[in-house]
Image 1: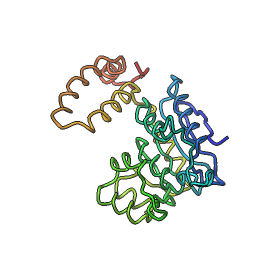
Image 2: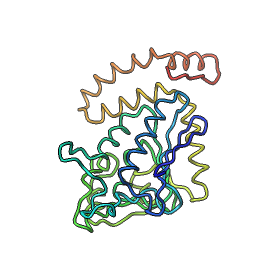
Image 3: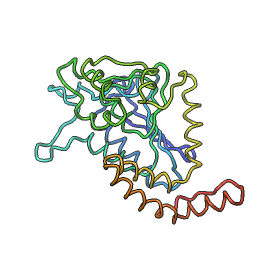
Image 4: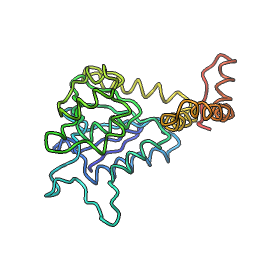
Length: 258
């Protein structure tokens, strides 16, 4: 199996399982990640998705350049020329659940794009990040929309033009990942973080993600108008009502996601 999907309580783990190819992307991997996300969204018990790679060497080394003679990891029908990665990134953005990147090793090219497309990222201190495309006459076009959203502009140009990788510590300094931990503590930290998210209101996270992606591309005044419509909508959810009751009664809320 190119992608392994497993469930543990409220967390669904999606693991790229091609360690012999440094967990490189191909059509089967892209399809498997997408299927894993859709499966999580269809399961009312799942509150968080974790995306990672097998082993301790690579999260994902980008597109697999071996399958085709022209160096393309995907076969694209000229009559339907949509790149499968575009559909995957759209699915990740529209996903109701928080997606956490567990960066266990190298995150390069398209793998870096996956990290940027996730909502948050926790990395091993041995991980590296980079977009080496300029070294082989390319530029990271497919992942630029997400790189531009999480990488400072001058750092973005540095990464893309030089093709040189950066350490996990530098990625955290630049705001690309939320935190780094020693490799032997990665699972414990991811488990603690996902447990915290699983306690929060699913409806608040769902509507919050929707609002974030909508307002991010709006002018400030337009975003304010949008926000004042969204807040009353959120206040009418059952989760919001339960949260207020729990606060007044000094107890932990029991969120259902409604």
